[in-house]
Length: 361
Image (tube, rainbow, N blue to C red; front, side, top):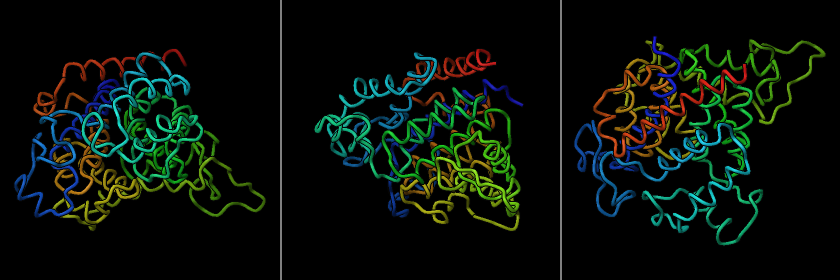
């Protein structure tokens, strides 16, 4: 089995690789059009076509969201913890000056709804940070917290609180917040060597009932009816369902009587659109089905079309956290632009995770 550092490094590099693979064929909702442009099976980094979302980038280059994840990793390395005020300063100083508030005008190609809204409220309206959250139901906040999940992987209670607060800064929807926290908790569990199978949800639910995770729960620890007079756990989030779905997706992936063939059609089963509730089921499914095969998992995520960049990014993080960096095919690492810097960041972040663990013990 790979080491904890190797799995932490694999999670970050897996996310970078998945993000960069999606730069070319991002957002083809017509699969026939995607195949006409890129062939029957995309298996490597590609050029984006003219006048599409990432026109101007090169194969293997990170687009804007990958760059934001990189900055978040560097922030965690430099600060050796998460602090909300310094995070907000980092966004004001290092991210917003590279945007112009339009979909196609920012660094790295397409600018998401979350970041456009943030530019409008912070730069154009000069609103304080407690008034800038968007109603977007996409996964941007979840994605930028992947480095946070790696850093706090051995402290799930702190991790859940940090991701919840950080997500709420830019996305106000409670369901989006709960799903963002849940994904990063699952990622941390995988870094710690837990399998992505149906048991992972019950392991997280035990922590809810101990009061360690901020989720509301009425049922007993095994999801049975509460005892008479037993009080419900009152949490930040309305229900624990975001923690329960990974186990169901993993069970579906491992059940021989449930077949999605070929696996890229997971995008049709769970949906091609961008909303977080389409992205996560597909990523959990592929992450469980291809737990030991990074290439197969990420390429099936990519070839499903629609919001394939995020699907590949999240799948890459989940599988990278299971197989470890050492088992990610070398060609995907070699094809990344600025790979030496990204590898340095991944090494430092995983080192910081191990050091921070020791300092808390």
